Length: 280
Image (cartoon, rainbow, N blue to C red; front, top):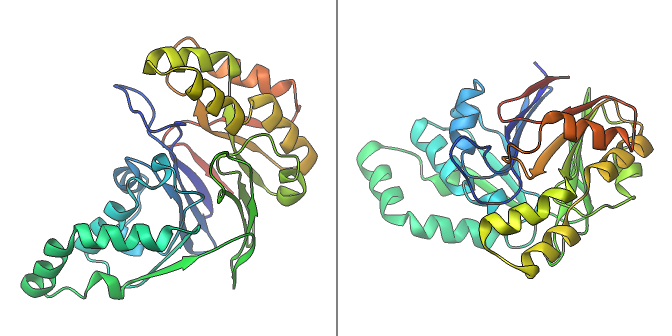
């Protein structure tokens, strides 16, 4: 079954009672199981999406902000303790190898004793870490390309395009970036981050932060109207709004997102929610 599952749809690292979880997604395509980003809650969300953690295959990280990697190590470790025996390939931007080495060091006692006491194959033998940059990342039955996107002050932030029998593009975290249109051209689904600019002041007030946070959000993310413009220029089959800013403010509803998107494109737009499944 080819599908995209939104495991967490909230932009930013904070979580609140009854709210959405930070960013992570599942792509099942042509019998390849791909996790894109690993925000807090990704492990349980995968299980609830019907995934046997022993079948994890590929993990891609778009950039190293905490809301995209906080549960990366714990996901892989939990898959291992669930019975993982086959390899996982982890693709990430520069710095991903250092992250993984640090995580393994933090769990060195547990890892060692489980190998000794439970007869497990050492976890480091099951995980291959690959650092990627812009261009072709994977070239087999599933082809993956990366495009560097602007997400200041992060230098190494990437959009990812997956091509098999279907095509799915993830924007990653990015400011409005017209080159994403050609990059995503013809995708069946474009999973694009989206921001309601009128909600930014509410986020700043809720967090108790000041002008620096406001300036970062506005400089590093894409208004929903502009995400729709990217979908229009790309000619995609569906725009799936993701990494929502704000995701958990009751003053905004799906109608607000739909109306803003309609200003940029008259195609099919879906506001993402945690656990949403899109069949391909």
